[in-house]
Length: 125
Picture (tube, rainbow, N blue to C red):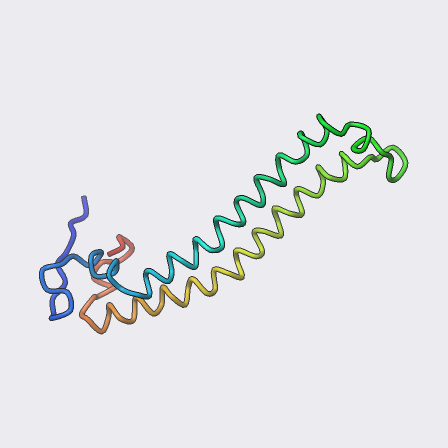
Protein backbone atom coordinates (compact mmCIF):
# COMPACT_ATOMS: atom_id res chain seq x y z
CA UNK A 1 0.00 0.00 0.00
CA UNK A 2 1.42 3.38 -0.98
CA UNK A 3 1.93 5.92 1.73
CA UNK A 4 1.18 9.61 1.30
CA UNK A 5 4.29 11.70 1.67
CA UNK A 6 4.44 15.14 3.20
CA UNK A 7 5.64 18.04 1.09
CA UNK A 8 8.60 19.96 2.45
CA UNK A 9 8.95 23.68 2.04
CA UNK A 10 7.04 26.80 2.96
CA UNK A 11 4.26 26.38 0.40
CA UNK A 12 3.21 22.93 1.55
CA UNK A 13 4.37 22.59 5.16
CA UNK A 14 2.49 19.77 6.86
CA UNK A 15 0.37 18.98 3.81
CA UNK A 16 0.38 15.99 1.52
CA UNK A 17 1.29 16.36 -2.13
CA UNK A 18 -2.33 15.83 -3.08
CA UNK A 19 -3.40 18.61 -0.71
CA UNK A 20 -0.91 20.90 -2.41
CA UNK A 21 -2.10 19.92 -5.89
CA UNK A 22 -5.71 20.45 -4.89
CA UNK A 23 -4.91 24.00 -3.78
CA UNK A 24 -3.26 24.91 -7.09
CA UNK A 25 -5.16 27.20 -9.46
CA UNK A 26 -3.84 25.15 -12.39
CA UNK A 27 -5.49 22.03 -10.95
CA UNK A 28 -8.79 23.84 -10.54
CA UNK A 29 -8.51 25.08 -14.13
CA UNK A 30 -7.74 21.54 -15.29
CA UNK A 31 -10.84 20.16 -13.58
CA UNK A 32 -12.95 23.01 -14.96
CA UNK A 33 -11.61 22.50 -18.49
CA UNK A 34 -12.38 18.78 -18.33
CA UNK A 35 -15.89 19.44 -17.03
CA UNK A 36 -16.48 22.00 -19.80
CA UNK A 37 -15.73 19.30 -22.36
CA UNK A 38 -16.92 16.06 -20.80
CA UNK A 39 -20.34 17.15 -19.56
CA UNK A 40 -21.62 18.70 -22.83
CA UNK A 41 -20.09 15.90 -24.91
CA UNK A 42 -21.73 13.26 -22.72
CA UNK A 43 -25.12 14.99 -22.77
CA UNK A 44 -24.92 15.41 -26.56
CA UNK A 45 -24.03 11.77 -27.13
CA UNK A 46 -26.69 10.40 -24.77
CA UNK A 47 -29.37 12.55 -26.44
CA UNK A 48 -28.12 11.56 -29.89
CA UNK A 49 -27.97 7.88 -28.92
CA UNK A 50 -31.49 7.77 -27.52
CA UNK A 51 -32.90 9.84 -30.38
CA UNK A 52 -32.88 6.74 -32.62
CA UNK A 53 -35.25 4.58 -30.55
CA UNK A 54 -37.40 7.60 -29.72
CA UNK A 55 -37.73 8.59 -33.37
CA UNK A 56 -38.35 5.03 -34.47
CA UNK A 57 -41.06 4.71 -31.82
CA UNK A 58 -42.76 8.08 -32.28
CA UNK A 59 -42.08 8.86 -35.95
CA UNK A 60 -41.93 5.49 -37.69
CA UNK A 61 -43.16 6.88 -41.01
CA UNK A 62 -40.37 9.44 -41.08
CA UNK A 63 -37.64 6.98 -40.04
CA UNK A 64 -38.79 4.34 -42.56
CA UNK A 65 -38.45 6.79 -45.44
CA UNK A 66 -36.21 5.20 -48.10
CA UNK A 67 -33.05 7.11 -48.89
CA UNK A 68 -31.05 4.81 -51.16
CA UNK A 69 -32.59 1.55 -52.31
CA UNK A 70 -33.59 -0.47 -49.25
CA UNK A 71 -31.67 1.84 -46.90
CA UNK A 72 -33.94 4.05 -44.81
CA UNK A 73 -33.32 6.97 -42.45
CA UNK A 74 -33.26 4.71 -39.39
CA UNK A 75 -30.35 2.71 -40.83
CA UNK A 76 -28.47 5.90 -41.71
CA UNK A 77 -29.10 7.34 -38.27
CA UNK A 78 -27.84 4.14 -36.62
CA UNK A 79 -24.73 4.17 -38.82
CA UNK A 80 -24.13 7.84 -38.04
CA UNK A 81 -23.79 7.01 -34.35
CA UNK A 82 -20.44 5.36 -35.08
CA UNK A 83 -19.18 8.50 -36.79
CA UNK A 84 -20.49 10.72 -34.00
CA UNK A 85 -18.68 8.57 -31.42
CA UNK A 86 -15.46 8.78 -33.45
CA UNK A 87 -15.93 12.54 -33.77
CA UNK A 88 -16.35 12.95 -30.03
CA UNK A 89 -13.26 10.79 -29.46
CA UNK A 90 -11.27 12.96 -31.90
CA UNK A 91 -12.52 16.13 -30.19
CA UNK A 92 -11.47 14.70 -26.82
CA UNK A 93 -7.98 13.95 -28.12
CA UNK A 94 -7.71 17.56 -29.28
CA UNK A 95 -9.02 18.85 -25.94
CA UNK A 96 -6.66 16.54 -24.05
CA UNK A 97 -3.71 18.48 -25.43
CA UNK A 98 -4.92 21.44 -23.40
CA UNK A 99 -5.42 19.20 -20.36
CA UNK A 100 -1.85 17.94 -20.74
CA UNK A 101 -0.54 21.51 -20.65
CA UNK A 102 -2.27 22.06 -17.31
CA UNK A 103 -0.84 18.78 -16.01
CA UNK A 104 2.68 19.65 -17.17
CA UNK A 105 2.46 23.02 -15.44
CA UNK A 106 1.28 21.34 -12.24
CA UNK A 107 4.23 18.93 -12.35
CA UNK A 108 6.67 21.79 -13.00
CA UNK A 109 5.33 23.64 -9.96
CA UNK A 110 5.62 20.52 -7.81
CA UNK A 111 9.19 19.91 -8.98
CA UNK A 112 10.12 23.47 -8.02
CA UNK A 113 8.69 22.71 -4.57
CA UNK A 114 10.78 19.56 -4.17
CA UNK A 115 8.59 16.80 -5.62
CA UNK A 116 10.75 14.02 -7.09
CA UNK A 117 8.88 12.22 -9.86
CA UNK A 118 11.51 9.46 -10.11
CA UNK A 119 11.23 8.74 -6.41
CA UNK A 120 7.49 8.08 -6.60
CA UNK A 121 7.58 6.42 -10.02
CA UNK A 122 4.23 5.46 -11.48
CA UNK A 123 2.47 5.35 -8.11
CA UNK A 124 1.33 8.92 -8.55
CA UNK A 125 1.60 11.63 -5.96
